Length: 78
Image (cartoon, rainbow, N blue to C red; front, top):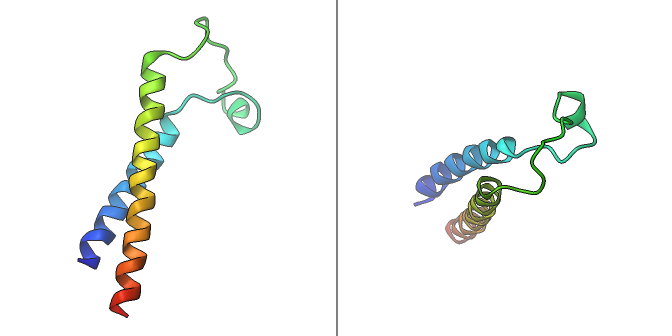
């Protein structure tokens, strides 16, 4: 069971990294240095960006839940 949660945690960690990297830079900091400071001609956030935000939050919550579940399993096992 611990192995299954560990594999799921690795998969969700990679997915979370991918989702965070897909977000558009908000300006300022390192995102400007690498060309992320370009202003879009369309103001506000699009539907795709809002959906990406929602998906990222859900995956982040699942990731956090997997960490807590794995910690509880390891504590009970050891």
